[in-house]
Length: 178
Image 1: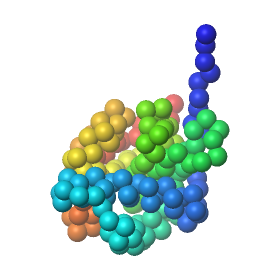
Image 2: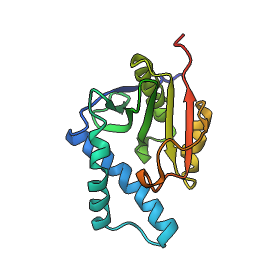
Image 3: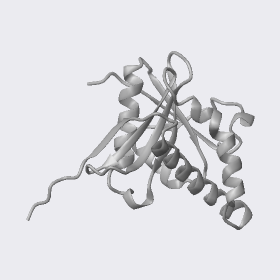
Image 4: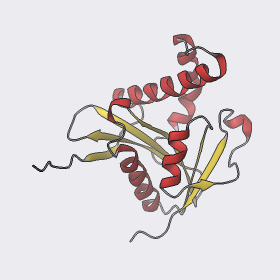
C-alpha cells in the first residue's frame, strides 16, 4: 500500500491579519512559557504575554512590505495556518529570519524546512546574499534545524539591548539558485 505525500504551501500573509496575529501569539506564548519555566520555575502569565506582545509590535510591523514579509504555511490543503517565518531586510545584502514557528501538532512533518526554503527563495528574489538570525541556547531543536540547513554560528548583528533574549547568532551565505 502506498500513500500520497502531504505537502506544505507557503505564501505571504499580511502581518496584521487575524491568522498572522494568532500564529505570532502562539509563537510568543510557547517561547515565553519555556523562558519563564527555565528562568523563573513557572509558566508565563497572561499579563506578561500581553506586555511582550506590545514589545514585539514594532518588530512585527517591520515584517510588512516593502522591507519585510511574513510567510505562512498550511499543511496538506488545510485552511488553518500551521506555521510562519518572518523575513526582514537589514541592508542591501542581509536579511534577518525571525518568528520561525510551527504549531506543535504539525511538527515533524516538514513544515520548518518548507518555511526556511520559502524564506531563502524570497531573500534571493530580493537580491539578498546573506541570512542572519538569533535564538536562545535552550531552543536546541531550533539550533539543530538551522544547522541542518546550513546556518553557522556568527558574530552578533544586533546590540544586546536590541534583543536581550538573543544568546546565539547564526548566518548563512546564500549561493546562486540552481
